[in-house]
Image (cartoon, rainbow, N blue to C red; front, side):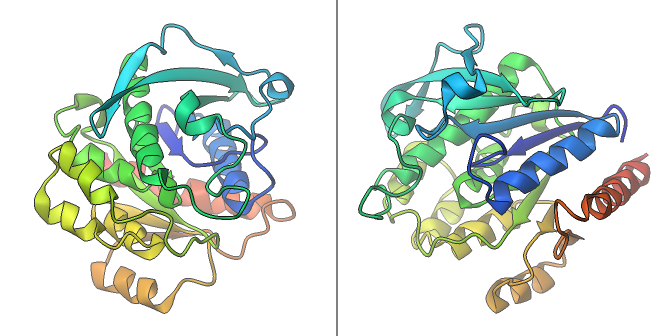
Length: 277
């Protein structure tokens, strides 16, 4: 695993988000890779819930200043960075005042999903890729957490298909217990059409439930990391039919049994590294 590069993209990473399993797992996986000689780059949105002063975020001028087009609007990209306390790991925050300054994550104070979650997801996706390009950093593995990050495989395989930094990266979709029934509206189709993505792939987003978003991501991925023991039957059958590589992290207590997570992680990705040599 030494010398390998792991890109972790998640809507939340501990300690910058509440102690949710997704955020905590992203942190633990990055720490495991890092402690075994790999290099990690972690990306999450700079939601308004993140306390910049407490966590000592600072803007990286050389990485900011890019305008990202989302549905024919030029949106300025701001990149902020923070170091996880007691760890030699940095988190890159994708920021934009219009999309992420609000003091809520996916829903408003009436618990209604934001209508622009689709555009926020597209911006986050493109922001990750544009930042990695500026870093001139080539990932070997990309871990995609949750529905909010699920557009990343789509854009890497289409919009950014000629970007050499990502040509050899293996994409793994992380499936957890955290769910939203329908986090995006059907308007996402128009946003994808603006970027001139293939129509046969765009059609799959007409009913963007979380289940469908994850299925679409899995279709373009190399494997799945299974964190949940409550996988919907529909998704379980889908994985079986795809005959896709599955790495099982389900049932592990991330605090009391962290050594088991480390063991399974190292075994899984060291084996893949050895198999490719």
